[in-house]
Amino acid sequence: MRNLLKNPFLAGKSRPLVVGHRGVPLLHQENTLAGFRRAIALGVPAVELDVRLTADGVPVLFHDALVDRLTGAAGAVAEMTWDQLSRLRIRREVPMGYEANGSPVVIRYAREEPIARLDEVLAELAGKVAINVELKIALPQWWSAHVGERTARALAAAGVDGSVIVSSFDPRRLLAARKAHPTLLVSFCFDDSTLDFTRPLLHRFTRAHTPQRLLEHILGANYVGKLFGMRAVGADHTLIGPATVDSLHRRGVAIGTHTLFPIGSTTGKSLSPRASTKEEVDRLLQLGVDWIESDDPERLMALVP
Image (cartoon, rainbow, N blue to C red; front, side):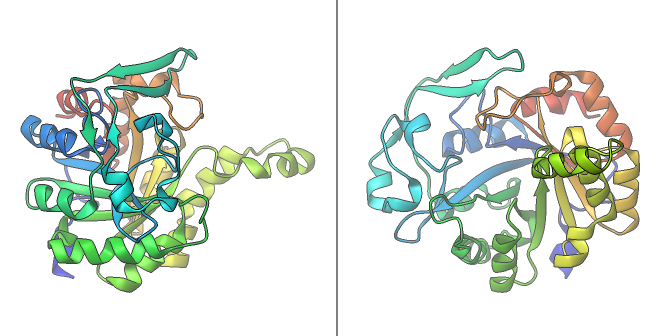
């Protein structure tokens, strides 16, 4: 319990924790040791990273289910062994999705980078930055929650559990992580499209509600936190308003947000134009959110007093 009370992601801070989303993707390829080392050199206090399991059960850092966008090769991470993945390189020119106006984004980096294992990254980051570890949904094996257990054991072995939050859009993975390591701080993630499947039903029965309004209600009432015993949630910045933050903080639940100053959308969802504005940073500061993820953490740090 002592580690939990000191966890930098929890509520009660004078300012939100700035989190480098997948490292510092403007300067180095996402989820690489080079990017995390640059974050440390820049003084970024926390980083977010994505974890998947290889076919032979090795936790690796990789955002996409498939390797094509980042490496130019073919295949799914979940169907490749670590030996196979270790031979690939994240290429110099990386497609980063699309800007808010629909223009494609490609970032050109100085050199290729290897795919990193979770254990080697934790050894590098331990004691230097706080870490948001996101457990990705593993297509085609979406039902498997082993990534939660394997990740939790890696965090315990590295001795970083007091400065880590484990997050996911899938509560089963979070429950598996906490079962393996009961004192881990876990956080369920909400996206602004989480309840899009309810749109036809809501439209049929009432025009007063939208999936976003329904999701705001679920978020503010902390139904997921009550159901799964979580002390933190993450949400798209477009979902967060005063009532949500106040409601969660009254319950002792921290709330973080993603992603400001985005390079592009690699998931196909539309980017909010206000995500890249100082006004949105000021709004979130005034609301008192507990952490903010950014593709440009250096810029965000300059705006968080």
